[in-house]
Length: 107
Image (cartoon, rainbow, N blue to C red; front, side, top):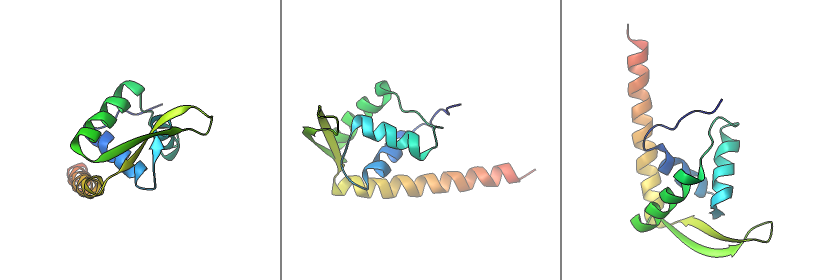
């Protein structure tokens, strides 16, 4: 069973995935799926518009290259502003999780 993403978490997961180095779109989606042990599947219809929005925001830059299977692919990587945004997103998410846990533990 795959889970739906919480609103706003796609950016954070893409930024975190790219923190280790440049990847093309399919590899980003695959890495998120693998890291979540198959619990999360990022659809192309969500991923590529998000990547384009992150390019416009200056969080990513992209270059054309060749994938492992010899296909032309656009490789995305974090910019310094993207690294700062990842820190903000992760901090906000941690606070949200803590707040949810407090509610779930109250009775």
